[in-house]
Image (cartoon, rainbow, N blue to C red):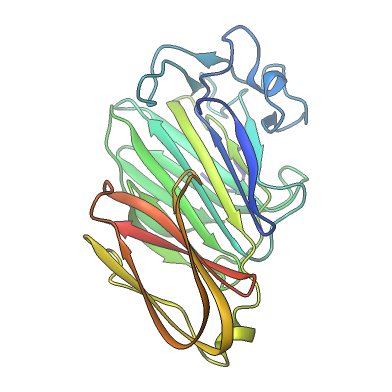
Length: 310
């Protein structure tokens, strides 16, 4: 629901490790005659945790992004106040306050139409808007209250990817379109519970497909890296080879994992016990362009960072 003050194959949910989780949904497993929230445990509506009713959506077959698939979800409204569709996807049972959340979805907006979504800060819908994102007239604008904090442009009549990378530990968030950053900001509300998809007015008309998110509870690397030490990924963006550079103050076991944007594990290398300055190379020459994630684990403590392949 818009804030009044401002203008997989199938559904997957599994643990990457004790501090990480991922979700992906391409809507292909659902039927087209039952509301999404009733068929899917994670999806709900603004007013109901079990879905159903006018706020819910049906999975449709008029357009889709998934290669080889046929289904997506569609939002539209004939009311100047928007709605009644109002679909919510929680990221966790309770609000996330630390670690890194990465959310991604593909959208298609016809020329002359608009789209909208927001992030909710807690489980009481409407109590805490982390941000609101408006897409209309080819412009995408992300608002905190009345203030636009990130802006950019999007294409009409074709599928494009919108991603949010939220580092809750450092309070640094990034809005990306087709894996390219439109800008970062430091949100006033640095916690998040769910995304809300809502047709905000009578110009709203948009498809959504290939929704995914991943979360890693980034904890405690300072204990093994030493004071004022950081993990550097260079170059980033990169073409073929990137390096993960860090210093281990005391001997510790090191693992480096590479994930796709939907949370699929691509590779995982255990370097055993190491100490001192480390430079671990990642060869991406055989992978397609886009956004990936590297997860560095040192003695069980993890840090995830995004990696852009050009």
